[in-house]
Amino acid sequence: MEIKEQSGLRAVLENTPIPRMALVRQKFADDGIEDVAAVLRRKLDDEKLKARIRPGMRVAMTGSSRQINNMALILKELAAFVRSLGGEPFIIPAMGSHGGATAEGQRGILEGFGITEEYCGCPILSSMETVRVGSLPNGDEVRVDKYAHEADAVIVVGRIKAHTAFRGPYESGLVKMMAIGMGKREGADSLHREGFGKMGERLPQYGRVVFDSCNVIFGVAPIENEFDRTCRLEVIPAEEIFEREPALLEYAKSRLPRILLPETDVLMVHEIGKNFSGSGMDPNVTGTFGTPFATGGIRKQRTVVFDLSEQTHGSFVGLGMADVTTKKCFEKLDTNATYFNMITSTVLQVGKIPMVMEDDRLALQVALRTLTQVDRDRIRVVYLKNTLSLDTIMVSEALLDEVRARDDMEILEEPRELRFDEAGELLDFA
Image 1 (cartoon, rainbow, N blue to C red):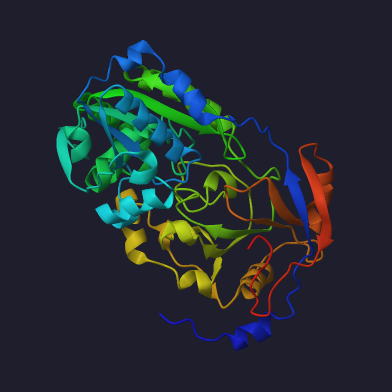
Image 2: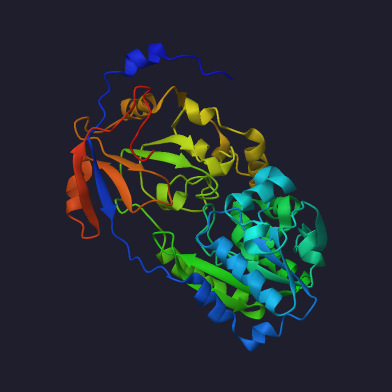
C-alpha cells in the first residue's frame, strides 16, 4: 500500500496549534546493583547448586526476546560457572513465536542484544523443533524445545515482571519462560488456545509439565527497577521456583516504571518495539492493553506512535493500540515478523494499522484536532521516548501545576515549542 501525498490534509491541519512542552524528571529510587557479575558469582557459590552439575553434562540456558538489562552478562557468567564444573553450556532462544517464528530470526534477536557465542563463550543452538512431553487437563498438548529436552540439565533465566495482557500469580518470569519460551511456536500456540482470560490458570499447569519433563536444576531471575536497572538478582533452586515466584512478582510490580501523572489528553510515544515490551509499548505504562484481562497505566483520549525501533526488526505488535502513526513507521512494518506473534497470542487488535500521516507534525496535529470535550486552550500532552525511558518525559503547560504539586517530579526545562525539522520530523527524543 502506498501512502499518497497529503497536501489536502496538511491544509486542513496546518492551523492546529501544538502546545508548548516542558522537560520533566520523574524521580524514582535508583538502587541498581553496581556489579551484577559479582552478585551472581556469589550466589552461585553454593555447594548444593554446584552438585547439580557433573562433568560432561550438556546444560541448556534460556535466552529471552526482551531487552533485559545485563542479560548477556548473566548468560556469560552462567556459562563460565557451568564450564568450571566440567559441564558443556549452550544457549537456546526461549521466545515462543518471536523472531518471525524462525530459528534464524530468534538467533538474530539474541545477537541484537549482545548475546553472541563469542561474548557468552558457548554455542547458541536455535531450532523451532519441539518434542511433545505431555498435556494439560483438557488435553491440549505440551511441547518443549528439542535442545532443552535433550539436554542433561536446564538453567531457566528470565526477568520477573508484570505481564501486559493478563493477571495471575505467575506472569512474566521463570514459569512463563519454561512454558511459552521453551515451548517455541507450537507450544505457545497450544498454551494460548484458550485465550488470555484463562492464561493465569493454564500457565503454571503448562510450566509444571515442562518442568517435570526436563531436568531444570535452578533458575536465575533478575528484577529491574524504574530505571530498568537490575535491582535484585535471585538464584532459585528448581524445587523452589513455583513457590517463590509469586512473591517476587509482587515486588517486581512495585518497581514498575510508570508515568506519575494519572491522565492526559494526548499520549505521544517516540518509538515502540519488542525490545521495549512484548506489547511494543508497555501497557502497564501507556494503558494501551490489547485484552480486557489487565488494567493500569495512564488514561488518555488519543495515542500517537511516531516510529519503530531498529531492534524490533519490523515487528509492530502494539501499533494497533495507537490512534495515529507516521509514514516512516508504516514503511518499516514487517507482517511476517508480526503476524506469527499475533496468531500465537490470539490477540489481533495489537497489530492493526492506525491512521497513517506523512510526518510527525501531522500525526500529532491529527490527534490534537480530533480531541473532544477538552479545553482547547489547555490541552494536556505527555511525550515519552519509549516505555523503558521514563526518567525524563515532556509534558504540556496544562500539566505543570500537577507536576509542581508532586515531590516525585521536577521541571528541568521551562515550556517551549517542540522542535521539528524541515520535513516535519520531531527532533525531541529522536
